[in-house]
Length: 452
Image (cartoon, rainbow, N blue to C red; front, side, top):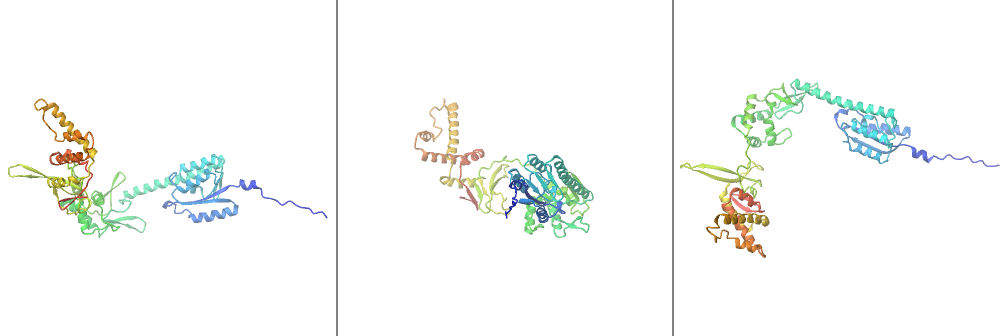
């Protein structure tokens, strides 16, 4: 009896190769506008069950928690499109079209990939979109509808905030001295903070009636260890911001418009206006006074910078004596008690350190050359006829030798003598210019300079 053999069916390799390669994409916004959207785990569970039922070939899974309002801002979505562009997969499996895009920019990138033939299919829980005009048009309508919902939500939120302002309720957290209370109908109202309000009220009174500055207010608050809601001391910037806030006399600004609040004001408008006058400072004319030695000194107590000021004293004979004092600027530590030093005493001590100073010799030599040229010009044009043999510059011989060879020692001595001359007899402008060639720094402690 002849044996009859029936051929066994072999799977077609071409059929396996033609099967779409899906990337499973799940997204949930990190913002509160998508509270009702299914969680990422829920999306994955549903889509994997659907893929198993329909025998879909999932080659990759991408998840992220990010808002889709703005174009190109989702890193994992960008990786999804890059994978399609590099042909790692050619289909997307997602819960709904709005998981992919809620803006026109990202939607355009998806449609472009479909037009290029790199993205074949987008499959959601309820429908599919392939690369044909009708289905692409439907996809664009659904994603545009999601964008419209976003835009309308923004408009509604702004309208709601404006309505809240019209009722005298300022949106956002209350300033220090007040606190927000959430009522049963979930409307936040502002009430006085019984603990901090008296301190804030006294802060306004000290500025308006006692002439306190912002720094004086900060010292007063720090001395009593006044703390904010976050248990931090108030920085100077926040003190000024509070002193300039009209909220405390019963009005608040939202957008470009002022509104009348329904809460209890802490101060009167008259006190607030007095504070604003007190805080106004005439613009300072920076660099009108030149203090050459500020940049080479630091405070020996707190390590802060050193500043200077001019004091005038009128004598009995009506002559006015001018004195310049250098001291800590107290920016790093307001209570720094480092004493002042006069400019004359500072120069005397600085001269003692001349042999040990580190100098920019090239820079100083150029300045010295300029001075020599000026003096030579003065000699040639004014004094040449009357005093032809006059020797104006004691360094001229050294200077000529320096032009030849082996002059480093003489040059250094010459430059230090030149620096000594400027320190003793130079103008503030000349001192500032020449001190740019000194790289050494000094600590000013107890009216004594110490080389760092």
